[in-house]
Image: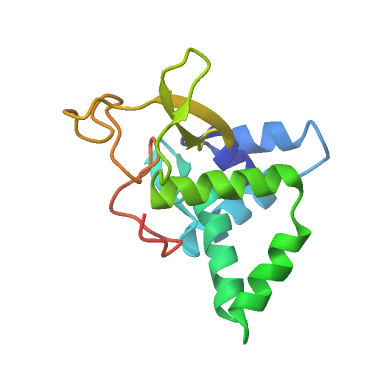
Length: 169
């Protein structure tokens, strides 16, 4: 899955095989079996191309990580204590990312942040490389994400009808 997520495009068994063979010896049939298993489990979809298939991730790595965290948290007998323990394990960088994520979900409480040029900005996640980026705020008369051409809550290239992680996004 790492390669499929990293490349963010439909891939063939041969492409994955050649990339893996740079690190270790591995058989074509092993890669084919793993991708077929991922398809059967619903992690990837595939489309026939000649005699081969092209495989594409059904969900993003971020959605997968979110589903794992949600599952682990929901199984705790004391969710508040689990969150406190989890936050206690975080680095300062992770805590900043958490604060940014909470701001995105809740919206600005104290007003927008000031960007480097003095203009208003908001902090949003860049799903492609999972780093923080600043984007200018849309004008009040624009619909959210209209300027970027993106669908709110969906990541570029993501199928809006699929929600394998059950995140609702």
